[in-house]
Amino acid sequence: MKKLRIKPSKRQTARAFYSSQSQLRHPTQMLQLLRRDILASRELAWQLLIRDIKAQYRQSLLGFAWAFIPPVITAVGFMFAKGNGIVNIGETDIPYPAYVMFSTSLWQTFSEAISLPVQQVTNAKMMLAKINFPREALVLSAVGQVFFNFLIKLIFIIGLFIWFRMPVTWSIVLAPVALLHLIMLGTTIGTVLAPIGALYKDVTKGLTFILSFWMLLTPVVYPPPQGGKLSLLINLNPVSPLLVTTRELSTVGILSNPQGFWMASGVAFLGLLLAWMFYRLAMPYVIERMSS
Figure (cartoon, rainbow, N blue to C red):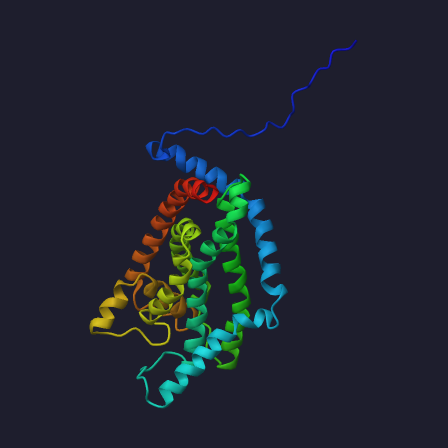
């Protein structure tokens, strides 16, 4: 009788070892593991992205038009208010309708970078409780949705440049860099809120009101004021220099607040690193709470 012999497989199965020791005691090792898991979750993130995009437009009558409708309605509302003297907007560097629609598209992208990671983790609660997989894939797929939605908005923005005959300067090639920093800041906030939002619905409900109020404190539908208390609030708002710089690089090519832009970018870079660490540490506790 022959003896059964099992040959070792060429592909080694990855093993995970769990310890009660906090990962914060070894931050370098934690960052290495974080980088490894982010890279390992790319394929799953791509599958989630394709699934969510199909689901997003499957039962929508207007489909991609939803990327254009909010900026157009916002522009019509503020043009009516400005034309009837209800609000005093002041002069803008480009035609006001184009100013509002372009700025609103940028704000939408920033707000999606906050809300989509929260929605993604909240909607995946059942999957998180039953299946062990790299949780970083959820945030990566949410970021992928943000970029996909902006590509649709980009068609609308190009149409604005053509319709209003706005000049194109060489600085427009740098605008994607500023936009990336804007998305990074939104992703930072969304990554921190995602584990909390999975436990408490207040986060999702409150986010809508907070973002609406935050938009009023950001020069989206009005140019940055040069003085007064509102100017102080706007200067302390980290979204303001990132959004304004993206808009200025895309249109006039002259930056009004480069120092503020780099300071806000530094906050976004450092904040995103800390947000990923918080997300990694918090998710096991969140899953344990959801499973109990």
